[in-house]
Image 1 (tube, protein in one colour):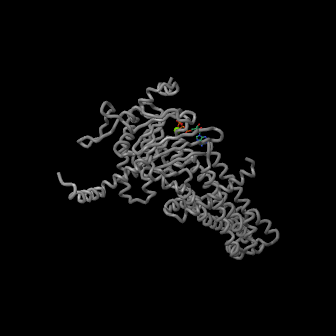
Image 2: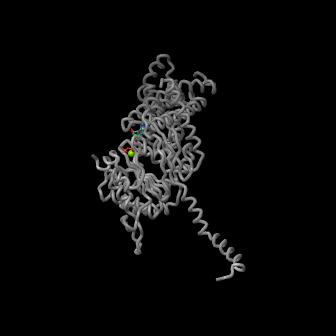
Image 3: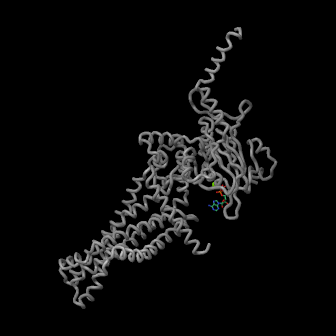
Length: 256
Length: 301
Ligand SMILES: Nc1ncnc2c1ncn2[C@@H]1O[C@H](COP(=O)(O)OP(=O)(O)OP(=O)(O)O)[C@@H](O)[C@H]1O
Ligand SMILES: [Mg+2]
């Protein structure tokens, strides 16, 4: 198969996976327990790494930009600069990348080993649709939890920035927070919440698809795990560009 | 005795009444149903890439019959079973379950059919993340059965395979044979009318292998289950085709040897070779076969 054909074929597979999982959500039996369990694993489980990532990213942003801002005499706007970049870009993207590394790999490894040990076949033989029992709760949990994780990363990033600004550059925490408050717009917040919804869908569907299409025994599980993480990270970054443009256009975001 | 002129109408009425007795009617319906085979393959073809796995395979499994499938490793036995479950689709031909043509069934339609089939996977295929209890209870949990009933049924099934002690263990803590038996218990929950065993005795010690064959015999003779029993081992074939399970006066299950007065008709053997059925019949015919391939298969040389 040539690469283009392969790409289109895979795109079609992923789309059908999403559609089936989505339709399955509205049919009995409902897999509520599985959903809650996945939300716990994905949401609560990823919280520490996402918070750490947010905190230090906020910190390093101030570390690098404060001297420049001070040079132009606008160091009082430091809070605005860090919060805007975090909420618009870094919060959603970095959280998504961390989650794709942690959860995307786990999902595809789990589903992949279920495929090679015939557990998926056994599940189908016992009358359960794996799309509904396994795929739907995972994708839905990612879509629901990623926005929360992103918000948490944003908040910790701002705190991290504030601590660096006051600790290393002697700016009062109040000045920093005032600048943050002036900088955040409602459009930024809405945009920053829409992105993780899509990223969750991307990570979930790619990881589930890669896991379920595993072939070739345990070696295959390793292969599909790697490609799930790589592919979902790249797609997140590419999608982020187009999503940003779309959000800018639709919400009419002001450049500053 | 009675004069026909006067008594005839009354008699007929009686007969009609008798004919309408519910038990008789049920029996009649039952007989019609029994005539429909539980599983039927009609000229089934299947190839992976250019490798032909099944090349025009036809056979039927009647109700209450056990079909033993013999064949070399890689001969397409597991594939045959996967076709019955609809986990794979044939390239050509038809597959019927209880007279229903499932060849073109969608995954959703197959779900209904799979409800009446129990499947014992070659490698057990237990759910690693679930305990033995939850594995066996899987089907019932999916059907949202009351937990009290689930527990009763799970204990009954685990007792059947003699694994009551392992109820709280995780699959990773079990030996291969125990996993296989949990797999059997899981497949038999809900009393499916069709059961498929994919090499259930491979790699087990002779007594455990014997227990599993006894299980299959009991299902066949006492529960009227139709089954497919895939195996390489001639010992299993011998057990399945020469012993019969009955319940004696004390209510115990006993196994009678086939002999002068007892001849088993509900077990047949088919042998697959290079995608074709090269033998189909009773064990006696298999033993008497002059085909060099079959002789070699039975003796190993
Ligand atoms: N998904 C698949 N893709 C390609 N080839 C396959 C696939 N599944 C099975 N095969 C091939 O089909 C053939 C039959 O496999 P099958 O598992 O049915 O054999 P078997 O008779 O059950 O063997 P065994 O006794 O070793 O279990 C094998 O040669 C195998 O290589
Ligand atoms: Mg096999």
